[in-house]
Picture 1 (cartoon, helix red, strand yellow):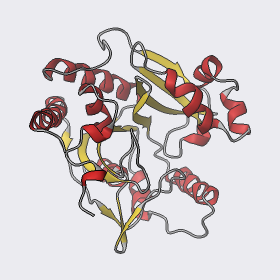
Picture 2 (cartoon, one colour):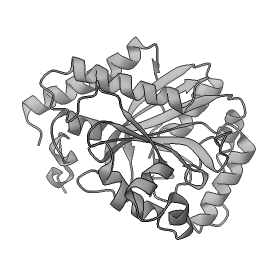
Picture 3 (cartoon, one colour):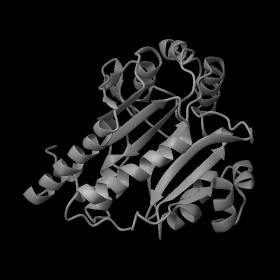
Length: 294
């Protein structure tokens, strides 16, 4: 169980996160935690809740607010759930921060990340953040990262179906060691919801942020073409071995009303863990899973 000092630091952390977005004219929103439909993702197992699912992300509904709700900049701090995720850096129930911008791309989200973490380093007292964030941050393409740290190129890893394995074992542990690292421009096959890069159509405008080898955030320029998004969902269902699936039709309809936009998800428990000088999520949540009554 988290002690009183830890509870105060956790409260201050969430307060300052909200303060940053409020001061930058973002509107805080809340969306349903129980969702009748979920976005198909091969690596995520959803938790049923009666005839719905507990959200793994508020993405679907936040994009609808952005598209048809008249919102320009929105953010949300919320509980998310993913079945079977347990370990030093994983919890089945965790806190997610997501924010979305109209008329923006993934480059602007990277700037947001820099500004947010630098802001927290100033406003949080007695923190133990592991890096000096005032120095220039590293921007590294996925292709260059595989060339630098792995035995195979990113393309070869995809062809041999070992991209995720090499990313986790060879690449990720090297990232964000001397300064925060943005790993960007993912292969298009690994970015179901991201916009294709115009100059290099084999790539997607997607990035992830790493500090001390820990992945903190996943962001991208949004794919806003409902026809292409439907095709990608179908391909995802096929890769998952699923038959006919109900499509999120209202989401796809809303997507057609959205022009350029960008969105990002950040694991706040992981970020808090780094500020607290810890290396295990179990140490920074009020009640670790092992301490819940069974």
